Length: 163
Image (cartoon, rainbow, N blue to C red):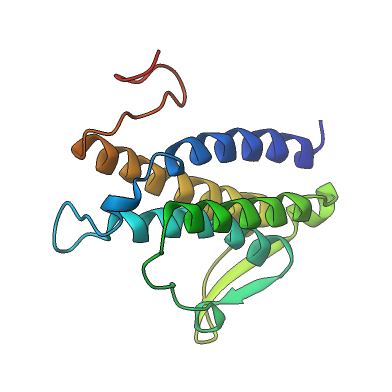
């Protein structure tokens, strides 16, 4: 099996699970926060929706300097805006996964103001900085939903709300 095929299967599975969570974000709770230091429900949803764009930063470049990455957008206007951002970023990155094993095994670096923070093969960087990062914040979203008495969908198996 090619590296691309394994990444596509993992990517498609995680994107489908992510959309299930994003679909549950209520428009009337976008500004809700569990704590003053936390992101709002809407801002966290928007961050999750944007994370697939990091796939493009990894797959199409040999390095990324954080000073060149646009800052996080402000609060989203609606769940529909979050879903639109997610669908666009998900589709764009899926197309960018059409790479050879050699391209996916090439090294990639994350820098800050020219200083190399670390380097990884693109496949590892994609899994770590995009997929695992997305799953981490998606988990936070499930807690936000639970704290607002919104049913948490089944993702890897049944949830307390869905079988």
